[in-house]
Length: 521
Image (tube, rainbow, N blue to C red; front, top):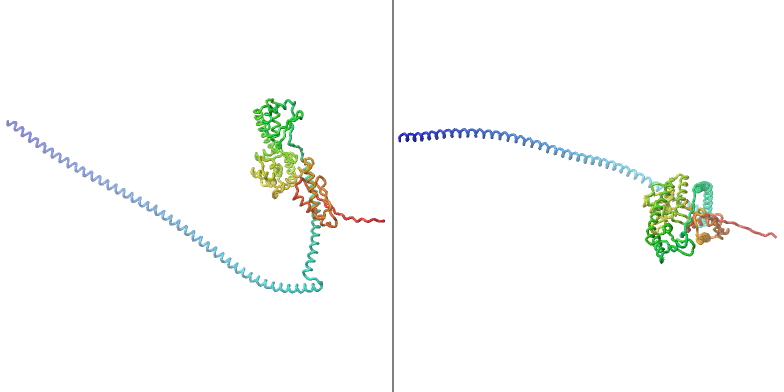
């Protein structure tokens, strides 16, 4: 039991000692941990202080840089403002200097003006005195002349005016006549030479167009096939082409009647195709007419292209080329319009070359001068103005447009091409055989010429000769003097120009004679 107790006590003592040792060791460890923690805390604090110091320095640097940047910007703003102020001051100084100069000039001009005004005032005063003296002397001379002549001043003046008026009129007519004769001697020969050479160098072709075409057939059996059952074929043809088809007792012929040559040509070609093919019925007729119309349109374009190529004209608008091609199927006064336009174009080109003008523009204007005669739709405008509008629309030059519009004096001529086109148009129309005229209108034109001459005082008789190209006027010698004869001829020509339309020109010849007859017995 004692051993056990000893053991127990020993165990307790050992435990106590072990506990005490453990406590001592624990305390030692805690002390070490505290020391280490203090060291670590001191180190962390030191690092934190160093980092804080670094951040502080960095922020200070950033603040300094920002300050420097703001300072530079502020200085730039101040410099720009100072520059503007300096410029404004400079402008102000310049304006002040300019104003000063202007004021000085104005002052000088004012002084000069005042000096001139004073000078003019003195001169006017002197002139008034002299004028009063002259008026007094003139009045005195007039009174003396009235006493000497026995006429008043007003009566003498009237007599003198009448005498001078008659003398001046006679002298003016004489001068005009001499000037005209001199101009004829110097200009007429050269003008005739140019025109004759131009006409000689142009080959003319005559093409006569009617409003009726004749379609020849092999036999009368074909007529029945063209007419069709109850006339359905011929009605289909007339409806498709717009041409009146006349089938009468004329052997082996059908008449196509229409004022539009293009439609008439389409009908003729379509009939030829139908008769050759043999299949004639309404559906086939419509098909053939449509194909023929397309063929004619292509031919019109081809004719236009060939024409402008032959004449050496380039850069023409496609629509104008088409219009030129359509001229082939148009006529004016019985003259084929395309042949007429080609002829005028060649005449214009040659005449422009002789006169030293632009040949290409002249040919262009000559070819296009009558395009207003082939409109797609009806228009109330004269063909010259309509053609000018088309030319302007499709980009033609101003000289060409003016020549087109002025070739019948519809507008004012603004270039030398305009009278050339007008003259060449008249030459082409006046060529013998170029145009057919209705007899009634021809006779009426001759009568109108004679009536215009009879409308003047002193005309005894008038005769239109040379197919209306010349007008012979016989005047009464008692009523019309030699000097007045030239004036009468000019007045008649001006009235004919303004009141009549005619191709070419009309020559007016005034004849005055005095006969004294006595009989010796």
